Amino acid sequence: MDAVTNAVPASLEVSGLAFAYPDGHQALFGVDFSLARGERVALLGPNGAGKTTLVLHLNGILSGGTGTVTVAGLPVGPRHMAEIRQKVGIVFQDPDDQLFMPTVREDVAFGPAAAGIKGAALEERVRTALERVGMQDFADRPPHHLSFGQRRRVAVATVLAMEPEILVLDEPSSNLDPASRRELADILRSLDVTVLMVTHDLPYALELCPRSLVLSDGVIVADGPTGALLSDPELMRAHRLELPFGFDPKSVTMGA
Ligand SMILES: Nc1ncnc2c1ncn2[C@@H]1O[C@H](COP(=O)(O)OP(=O)(O)OP(=O)(O)O)[C@@H](O)[C@H]1O
Image (cartoon, rainbow, N blue to C red):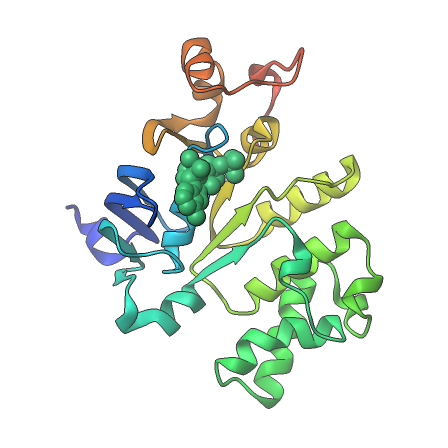
């Protein structure tokens, strides 16, 4: 380990993670990877590869297999669960799973308030989180009066308000029109946080994530620069990854 790695622990270390569901179905077979602080990484892979199973291990929703998950040096496990839930923010695919309060402000305040933050500090958290997703003018609106794209941005704000170490996004571009998709990409690029993005939208992964992991049948089969992975026809075919018709991965200039 070099001096730099020693000074700043990785945002996420997954080591030898294997997991079978109670019905005996083995979904993960020894997964290893780590994310450095501030990296944006896509988690790619066909349906049923184990992506959701892996993500649900990152904040301890699933546990009981073998191997370890460490977030900013802290092992994921029952002893540190409150801290882990603060550090790993998961934005689920359907914002309506995350928004349930009468107003946007209350939804964004919910997590930090439950963690004991009050008064001016809580207001500041809410204001900052909403500004980061460009939704500060919607604080007093009921979430169910917002568009799908606006609700997704508020869902991201509810997680940012916890000041997480890692932002995990499940299919962030799904159901967004092209303008909303681009606006969300700009927001994600502007955040100073480690991002793990689960997606089937390969152009979006290429646009946003310099590095990708490919999970297939419960194993990481590739880990490298997104452009190189998406330009490898054998890898793509072997793991049921398909680019949109006519899309050339070399034509995309990635936003750092
Ligand atoms: N509760 C469960 N009990 C048993 N098997 C499960 C359960 N949930 C998922 N699986 C199985 O585990 C494997 C991995 O599923 P998982 O949902 O993690 O895949 P995924 O990569 O997220 O897929 P998708 O891209 O379709 O969302 C699949 O074979 C799935 O059928």
